Image (cartoon, rainbow, N blue to C red; front, side):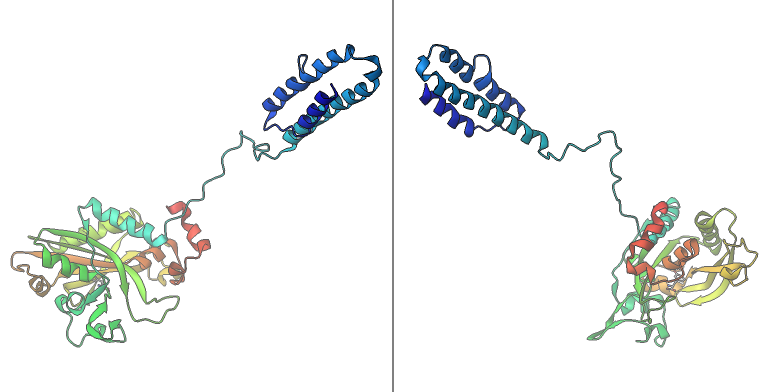
Amino acid sequence: MIAKIEQLLAEVDAMYAKNADELEELRVKYLGRKGSISQLMQDFRTVDPKQKKELGVKLNELKTKTQEKINELKAAFETQDTGYDDIDLTLTPYPQKLGTRHPLSIVRNEIIDIFARLGFTIAEGPEIEDDWHVFSALNFAEDHPARDMQDTFFVESHPDIILRTHTSSVQTRTMERSQPPIRIICPGRVYRNEAISYRAHCFFHQVEALYVDKDVSFADLKQVLLLFAKEMFGENTLIRLRPSYFPFTEPSAEMDISCHICGGKGCPFCKHTGWVEILGCGMVDPNVLENCGIDSRTYSGYALGMGIERITNLKYQVKDLRLFSENDTRFLKEFESAN
Ligand code: DAH
């Protein structure tokens, strides 16, 4: 019997349970009514009285040790940090931090949406361009200042290769490869050799629109401009066209809208004129149509181009152009609700 007790003491010493169920099994195995220790207690009654004292002490030791070990294992489960104890399942989930769209993307998408409703489709072209698509085909004179290194980024080893200075180059490419009707909107990044300041940057974004078909007139252009201004800046917006000059349009105009801050009454934003300038436009010069392989006696068209930064500034009064390319999340977050 003493050997049995020693064996059980060793077993209890090494006892281990992974969870409460396993522990309960062990308890039943050793201390349960039919468990090994209870069995020994029964046997104890019939033991030789001379051995009773020594065996009794051993048996008690085994019983206490087993109970202690079980308590110890139980306590370990209860204090174990499962990581789930302090979860309150009734709480709402943590809000997912979503990124926000860049203000220039928000405005670009808005411009595209307006023109898409009029049947314009998106066209794109390369940012690294050649002189023909940016200048020559668009009727720029040989000595036009835009062709100067001061204004345009050239690739040193290839003077014919430049960074496009306007998205009008996409007009050229589209007209070269397709015949009218052409109705496209061309959003994109453009580059100019400017010192970076709060009001100028060496790159910015434009959207160009081009419509070429039979019998396209200045009246069509005016209608689209008015509709665009109202959609973009509100139903009460007025437009004003001022004669201007661009090599690729004839006649050319610049469009102002009534100042949406003061409603046209005059304020510091519109320099007390009641008007703010937003884009350039005109009827596509017949030379440009011919340069791109389109018969200028059959077809005519209008074009317009605007700076996305400019429109964004008007809508959101961003005073420093540099903010658009710094990716400061404090600035970008301000547009969360416009997304
Ligand atoms: N390309 C001109 C610029 O960068 C903007 C422009 C003016 C585009 C008149 C046009 C237009 O299509 O008709 O300043």
